[in-house]
Image (cartoon, rainbow, N blue to C red; front, side, top):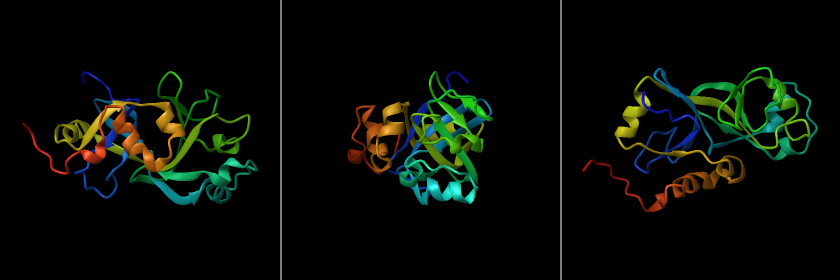
Length: 185
């Protein structure tokens, strides 16, 4: 593989009608010759973080969990929690994604979300999106996705319902004006 899409956004093209990925933005966590793994970052669930914490019997009395929706990260392992954040604290299971972004899958980070001991910025997902070797590349060739380097402002500070349009604007594209038809010239 010549280049990795790790730390990039996948932006669903308007014609992508897949029920999981229609109008989605996926943050790519890993991408190599074996495949890719990412998290959909613009699909809030009806579950608030405080409900997830209660279910896991994790005490967190901070205000942020009450107002933070858990996101649907993708159709694979829908019960697996994942946190993208910007703190390099020594959580039990953390993978560095970029110079200042990390992915933690251990529950110890959830105890500190919203506190001065937790990450400044974080998004919490359940499930993830995965592609086998060559599958994502083929979907890109088929015009299912646009790609652009990830942006922390979109990831952490743009409302979920605006991330699809905002990510496309990084490319100078108004995605709402793009055709729902696909083709090759």
